[in-house]
Image (cartoon, rainbow, N blue to C red; front, side, top):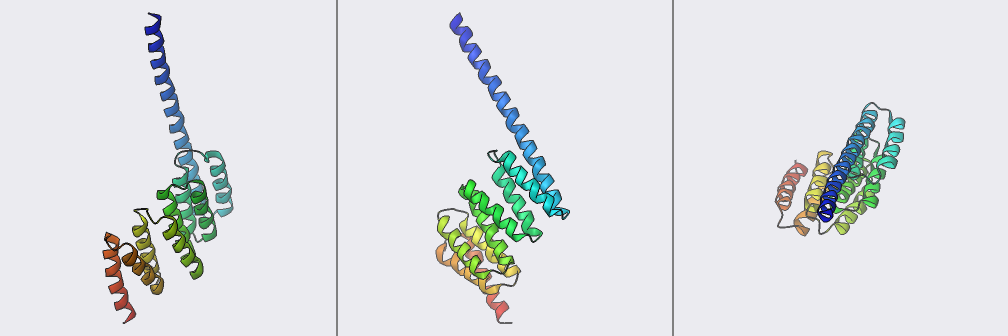
Length: 195
């Protein structure tokens, strides 16, 4: 009888612990999302000093929370959109350093490349693309990431950089869907250059 009571007590304790942990994580997720929305609102309204302070507080408060890497990545993208490229680069480097999981780190590395493209820093673009290719060579998202960067170059009329990226994809990832798209983009970029 005591054994049965002990087992039932353990099961009930486990269920209660799971419910409390779930509620805690949900509350953390909601609070993290609210903090992110606050930062994005400040960025969108041009209050960059306040946005910087709110970003730093968000990182301090939620540094070990699930979803922090994605949140910081989204904030970095917002900073890039408002042309605060150095802040976007810094936040992206934070994600890479603190959360080296390939799926987040690849996109953060792409954010760094895109910000450097917009800064028109060709040498940094080349070195960051080299780092991207070297550090994430086995990542299945790499060809797509390189293709997106090539498209970014093409949209901003940086045809030489776009051509380099498309050639890199066709050379290093020839059997991917992105290689096919890159070949088409190369044909189109050759047409553009010859007009």
